[in-house]
Image (tube, rainbow, N blue to C red):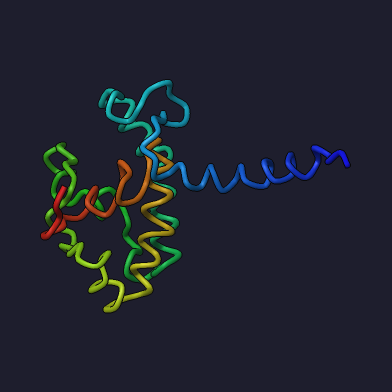
Length: 154
């Protein structure tokens, strides 16, 4: 009996979104939306323009949706701290809470599961996407992109 190619094609088509989702940890090269370059290859002017036009509005909305009162005054300094004043915008920002990586940040997930979930789903993943980077522990953008992780081993 001859098998139809339809079930195999259906399986491949159904697997495509899963492959795309897993790609965020493969380290594949990506570019910043609207630019034909990776984030680290963009000039300062392009980075500033992208941050002001795309990143800051998206993150302001995310943080204010999470806690409107706490993040009512969300701006560049919320993430970049004093680096805004001197123009360095250096990250990670030592003014942000320091983290501990042990047990996949278990200490933080246990102490405050809501903000841990928020930071992963509403900050880390969208930020990686906004910067054209991969996300997660094996990606280019992870917790340590913004926070100092005291026990991080590369």
